[in-house]
Image (cartoon, rainbow, N blue to C red):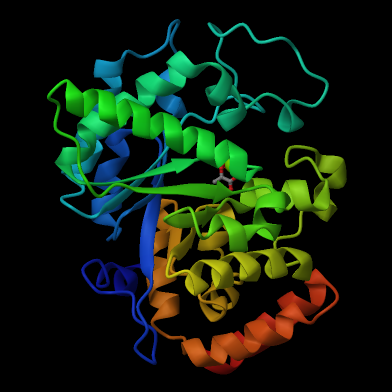
Length: 325
Ligand code: PEP
Ligand code: MG
């Protein structure tokens, strides 16, 4: 099977009925690019920049960040690279950033919330990204957006930093897409409004599931509630995809669910445009998608959305797949 998958490295990800979707990779460092290339990644759907900040005793400088972003953009040779701005807090701590302990870290001061307040940290990263933008196809993505206001603030800071760089004679790309992660139910519910202002969405199901089900993604005792196939999750995903398409925007997914064999048929059917997963899952996903008919999967997804439980959804997907393979 692995040998069959390997033949697909340079193939497009086309469904039986000729629809293309993009299979991208999640990476943490520039060193991960080798794996992306070897596994036929069509882009980077999530570059988790936290690793630049972790395992050290001070913040990375603007130049250190610039070098890392440039390396990734050049390495991808013009293919899309979605860089997520700093998502620290929650389960990820920085020893040199003394933050007060919180009762509920996952509901606390993390990601964009921290960046909008600790502006120098955020603006340094934005400048590094803007300067690197001329070396490839950069898309910037903000994590943990809960309100339109947060997105507008982040976008305004990006615009300010861009203007300052341009005035200082720096070259900055003119077509950087700016999008958000959908990890919080409020944002999925308001996707229609966000879609008018963002260039793209990327659904972060790892967090979206924990916030929708109110079940800590690290807590074993409530892990039975961590249900990717729960129709409530599927409905949120569908709302986001539909809202983006109505505004001519695209939606990707960079949570674990995007590389899941049982979820892929449903996501394809709901019209997801980009699937971002660990590089080692890409060829298997490509092989699977090349055997599926999008119109059939759309019908399957339509049924799943009306179901009551995750079990029913899993059952229906398995049944459908058993007819195909
Ligand atoms: C997510 O929440 O789905 C996601 C991709 O972000 P992280 O796993 O880094 O929180
Ligand atoms: Mg997340």
